[in-house]
Length: 58
Image (tube, rainbow, N blue to C red):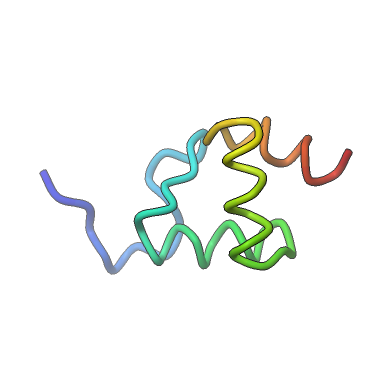
């Protein structure tokens, strides 16, 4: 089943899907970072939301 693009937040809030624009929008707003910074964090620690948040805050 395809993602419902009308949903504004990610369906699985434990993972960050950089390939979905609505998820990138959600996570950059939530963490207060640019897309580039989010991509760097995901590259450094993987796509787990908790790990990315810890990396960005730490």
